[in-house]
Length: 258
Image (cartoon, rainbow, N blue to C red; front, side, top):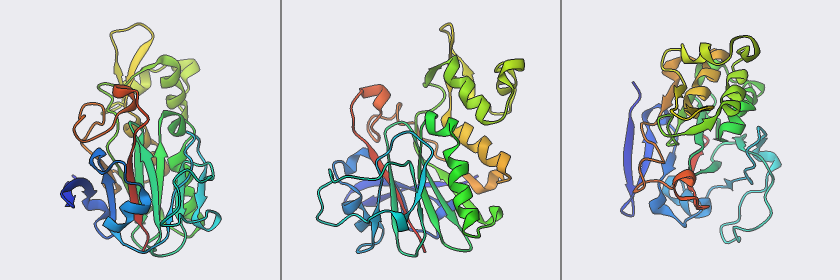
């Protein structure tokens, strides 16, 4: 069982995961708002290049060599490349994603020290963005058994109501034949990512569990994966939740390559 730890910086709380203890990283809370990655990098490792993208709920993962780092004094409204994942090619680079119910995913290679940060909402998960990020590691020579994947605070399946169509798209990302069998095989899985909903044509969906299943299908073992025991929707003191508040406010998650 992987453990998560509350840390404090300037009296403000953020989360770390023991699976990533060898990397400077953090899943930051709403308490840090309106700070941005240019500020938050000082919590992890000051004076290093900072990278972020314009998130569009897709499955594109960019390498830092193709993205301009943020200038410390730059305005946050400067044009950004569109993607939902960043792979750090060099040491001492900080990659960041923003979330407000979607899943922040931080990935690291225990041998090479390379890292990635991924924004995985249901659309990105249906399009298999986390496997896409894993493919970037493999292209750079990583072995699957060396990867460590931490899925941070996100909306939990107990409260995330979606349509049957959304659930079907996620099931198809796991190569289930929904035409022939519907969603029943997903419901039968241990610790299923789908839960029943009292409303017709609706289900409850756990995006993090779908990502974990995609990782396990790639051959990544459960002990290489950690899921934070926190729900953004159910913890308004710690996290912004778009579904709860309908506000465009986010918390950041970032990790530094070795």
